[in-house]
Image (cartoon, rainbow, N blue to C red; front, side, top):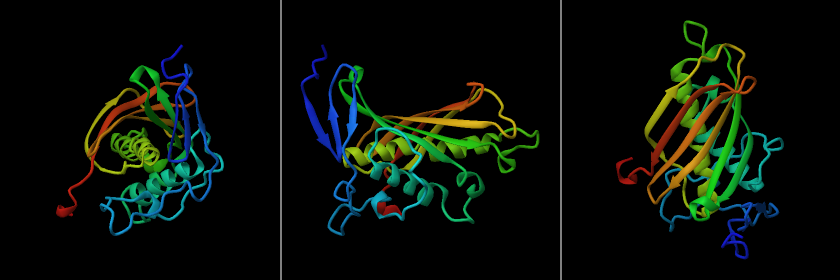
Length: 227
């Protein structure tokens, strides 16, 4: 039996229960669950997910994360990651759809929480190189935006800011992806510290299961005085 089997805690609208299967049951989504934008008396956040406008459709997003977490994840992805129509990569970023947002307690990591997001996108003409394959720069763009999201999710659950700027990204390219390929982008949190945070990502061909690319992403909270 797990040493955590009889202990339960509550965090940011999640009812988190330690068990041998590490099950996590989301609490009902209510307006009181959703965090409010930081007041002027609070330490200013780089990007506050609670202050961003609602974007994306969470009705088809599965996973055990509370509804407000799924919504704020979408809001942060679109407002901060994708940006306006004249932003770099907009034609690619707007096509990404999240299909799962989940939070698990990993008993092998002393009960630490781990957030995972799964997004999907179909390779279109705006994503190709001259050879008609998915461009490596586009892969980096997808990883930078999508691999950031589990840190946002984990931050929301732990009541810390998980939005940062990219410090380093280590990408391995495994196989090509031609026009029409459906990509599954699976991103998982690794660590979320006071200022530095890390996540990992795999991009798979959803039909064949082939790995297209994998990566580790490091992000950090910027020094606000330098912005």
